[in-house]
Image (cartoon, rainbow, N blue to C red; front, side, top):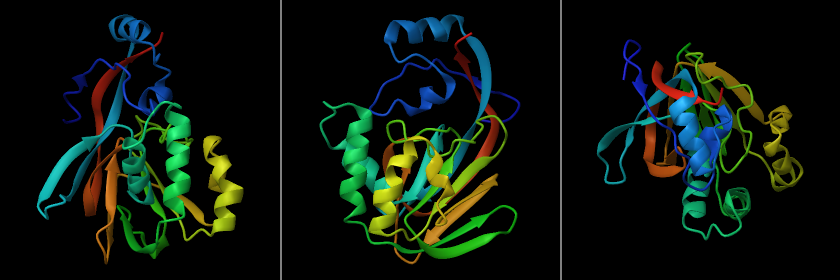
Length: 227
């Protein structure tokens, strides 16, 4: 994928969270999604190229269209993907969030951005967002723009159980970003590592571990959105 040759794709919503299509207003019903893919307005968006460590220790690379994360969110995705979806995506992911939060042990994580800014701190999560929504309608990156050539990078710090209880409901409105232990930056490149191998998740699938590098590929994909 490169800036001079955007790939055309038809977007048919499947899966648990339906978060990619939520950013663009693409219908979740099959027939309506087909009509949008056929007759909708073209929109060219960025994707992320991700280099990471496979579970067996080898190197791997793949692309992310919506959101990637490092740390607790990757464990949440794996828990949610192993659960029944009878209650729908939002309830499934929130239940997984609660269960994983009380089991998760934070560790010191190193995050380096392309402008040279470096953070080394005890973190719950590093969220690298191209789209706004993740985890079954959690509004994790409300200011993300999928065609601006930048990721929105959300760092969720060493939050306590009280922090979680009072702030978790706000993730659906994006108001959780006001919490003093949450920071947001923008970057074209994000590198994340830790002393222990942390799980990473790309578009809802746990694929491997740190170290990981995210690079924006500008204007790589062309989709159709409702007119």
